[in-house]
Image 1 (cartoon, rainbow, N blue to C red):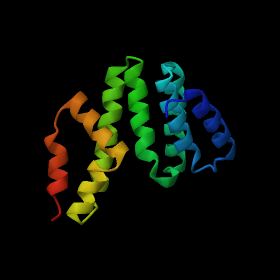
Image 2: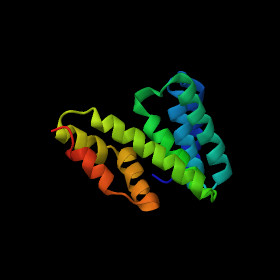
Image 3: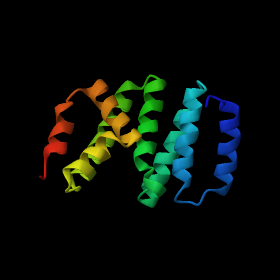
Image 4: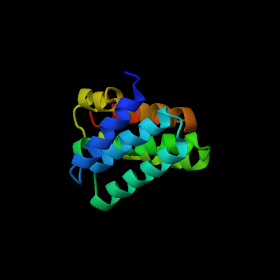
Length: 144
């Protein structure tokens, strides 16, 4: 709702209560908040912590891995590390498309890629930064 100070307070409380599997997702949200506050260096530090925790645990709770990878790419881009951001968003897109390929039902696969906000944003940024938008369409149309 635009109250970044209140969001900061709530995230601080959430970090204190988060279970280990949920912690990277909360860090991802904190990184997004830092980006909204214009605190790009802090956003990247927090995003890198979130990505590292997801990697160490082999995943994140409540399917937050895609969001963590997205905010990491956005933080890299915000500090001007465009090559690293492009690499990060390419990896995030590859991971999403690999998951989509395992969804047999075409409507569910399309919904996964287009209706889940962080997935749609990941694909949109990948298209904008890297091109190759047809790659997503091939994954939506596959496995029918």
